[in-house]
Length: 334
Image (cartoon, rainbow, N blue to C red; front, side):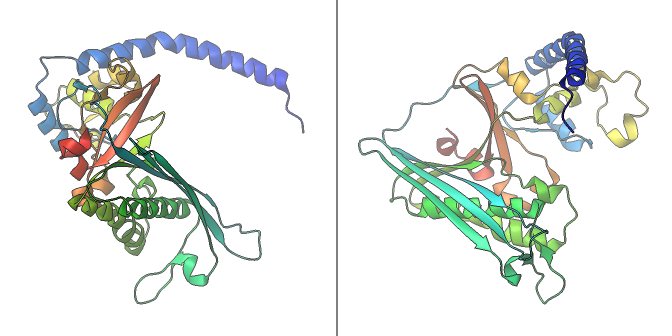
């Protein structure tokens, strides 16, 4: 059946009218968020304690060095390298007689300075063996099929593994930035109830193990690790402002919000972090540093606890995530 564009056009018109009607309310909420962000009278230490003691159904950023701080980009070193990996995959097709999946990892290594160089590489891998199609528990038992969300997570693990391999090839005393596409937080594991052996295989003995390999390379070189997220839809920082606006000393959204009639925090609801920092950051500037309070990070990441900041690149506001060991080393952070 063909698509009736005349019927769609009428619905598009309704959508545009609704967007126009809600525009003024959205601008008011954004301005309230900006005013709260830049409020010099805000007790930051008190807000930190309030965030730490509160229980919310929405993810709230942890404060590290304030809220409104902005930092200009430092000068580039004369010699440095940028490493990056990104991948794609073809999932298991249940309509085919042979069960298999494919992961392709692209890798880039760019050297800048007096002797610039470039490496572009692609590594496809086809998985079809019975032991490759599932994650099996130690000692036997029913395995977890690697498909769908888990295949995407395995691809992220393989991307990080390839990045560690590239980093190991760097010469001693070199300076480099290693980039991962997407988040350092394996959200697919956070939102599902997979068996513990799945989390152990993919996160503890997989992703985090490769992060640790990269961290240890700093013994004889300067190697920073970061992930780059374009067009982020996160609201962690705005949610910290919601906590600041709430008049309660501590917050338990499950217990308190149903009884609350004033709902001061709703004054900034719906605003995204990138909207906030699009109005505060100049070209090349980054925001203050924040920490993730995701349950999976708190439970599993340890010394690789995820921190993040926002960065203006041309007209884009990107979210950059870094592990704790980068966040705590100013030379790597900058």
